[in-house]
Length: 366
Image 1 (cartoon, rainbow, N blue to C red):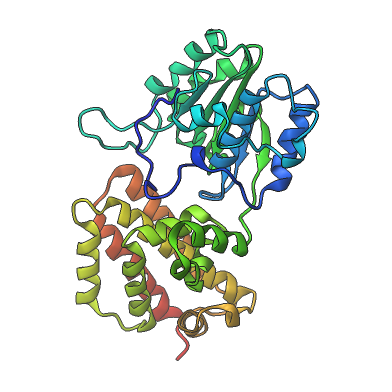
Image 2 (image 1 turned 45 degrees about the vertical axis):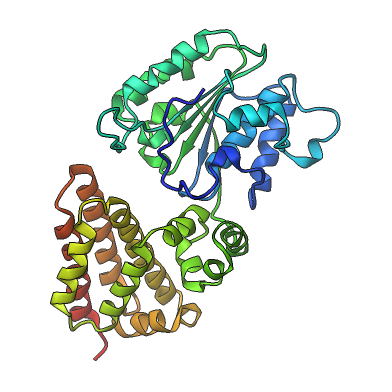
């Protein structure tokens, strides 16, 4: 059974455990199915890739399939991949977070404040050895999903090593990883790795249209900045960070001149109490947008950008764009440090925009 209250950031959209389909990862699904069919399934899989592309959805699909067919794929029907019908008892149990042989480890909100921490603690991870010490209630497999393994703190990461080193019979760990490079090497070395690639924009458009409506799916800039991630696109649609980001684009269009009062007003808005999600989405959008402009300029593909972005790229970013690559790297490090140390949020926004201004003053085409 799951170890967390419903604290997912995308409450307005189906959770991965509720999704009946998975687009764009047919090869990865086939690899898992073939490994299971072989009878020599590795006990731990590291499912890696950028956030929001379907890693958790794949983990739930595989978990359901193994729990539904504990003796291996059926002789017929496996042409449908890892699909388990939504009417099936196993699907309904997993959907209701009630399957006794599935443990899901995620970040848990504090019992008193309700605040969702930035990491998974050892107290949560201690449930894993206890879970695998019990016999399977249904007589088949015991499956644990960790979503995400790169959110384990060091003590929690060390605590799962024993299970990875000495896995019980018919045990399966599915480790979702947004940043596999941050994971302990001793964990990576004990897992079979499955790398998921960003989705084709057509798949992003299809799912965004299904979940958020045709208007959102038709926003080409939103789809472009999602960079193959359905999760990012839906997060942009859901929050107010998208409109705030568009305001930053207008500010950047005027660089190297800067409307300082407007910048301070924007920073104050994002730093207000209760806007933590908006700030996180805003910084993600800003760094992704800079990366898109830099890549397009470096590849000589500015014509593929939106008109306003095309103007920004050609006027502010030289070729080669070394100064902007350095600025992007500093921005990413600044955001990471601010999140880790809980630094002043308004100052984070001001520092980010002033950094763009300084870079533009050096590189702008006169």
